[in-house]
Length: 114
Image (tube, rainbow, N blue to C red):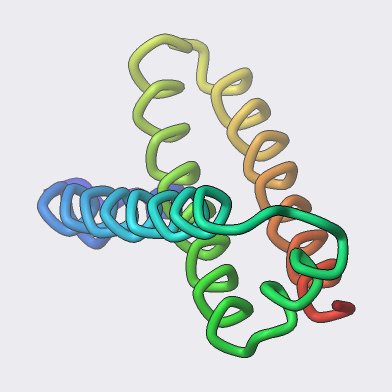
């Protein structure tokens, strides 16, 4: 079995399960947001109150982490399939993973400042 430090999963099965579980969490978060938007007249105060709830903050944080896991494994899969030069693949993977980490860090800062 080949172990690759660039993937989050310990094996192909583990990566498969991580991607599927993160997709389910992201789909539930999407439904949560859409149901809130559909059932309220949105204003700044309503939106602030919604994201001020600890349950919404926790669910959003979980969705951010799931987005990172999903992107990390997905980028590895796409780049390993389509970028055959090792240097460019590692470079692109590093840059894109740093961007994903930055998105999560920015999301955490924004989320907990509300």
